Image 1 (cartoon, helix red, strand yellow):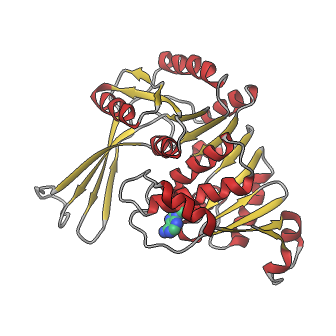
Image 2 (spheres, rainbow, N blue to C red):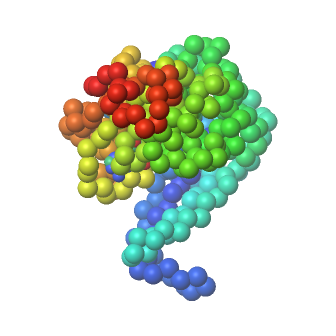
Length: 330
Ligand code: ADP
């Protein structure tokens, strides 16, 4: 079973305006509320791939009720804890030039009582879980190292832990056993204080984190595909060019693909193919966390993966052609 944690879900409201002017009354032509939060996108995509994930986190108030209804429509198992306070709303205002202005609420403060309810439920669920995905920001009230606490619980239960978060929440989590983290280039750059553009940059930055307890560092690079660093290998994923519609949620979709593959015991190469095919398919759809199975079949055959030995890559001269460092292609 796959379990997905979303601590701080939201209702995402998208307003499309001709022009956005500060200090004026504006009338929105198009409003599209959706149940948001990275973990909910992950859950939607896992469901589309054919597996029913179990979702948990915190929901409260009328907004929480709205999200609960949406979750029921998607058809995933709802194990969210009801809390006092109101689940947040996040606004995205887009003008006719595509310029986006976002207003993000912090979300409700979760009290100790509800954290305890959450942990009791999680302990039960982990006994039946093979892969746990934790995505997005921590809710207010949770300690900053709470993703480490989740990782410790996964280790005790032999559960593979995928963590997709950023900033301080990620920095405080990396001392527990994590099967996979999935930063994009900006996120990897910000936790390692570097600029990340090339494969060399990813390897240099990733090396620092591999020294911790992270088994796989999966760096998503938008249209440039993905690079995965493991203890002994580098996998460079090359993807086909597409006409993008909306890439928001592609990272969540690729996490979903990876988690699904792991739960089905696919090997690493097949997991990488599926993860990227899900990311690509999402970028071809307007809705966030939306994929098409026919895209998945098509793109998994078009994706090329190069494998390098990590040790050789690091020790060989930077000027050496990458071809000479390669040990396999898939
Ligand atoms: P995030 O949403 O976390 O920033 P990315 O934008 O890197 O994640 O996207 C995750 C994956 O989705 C990429 O590794 C790639 O496979 C696919 N993807 C994202 N953007 C594009 C794009 N413009 N064209 C093709 N594939 C894309």
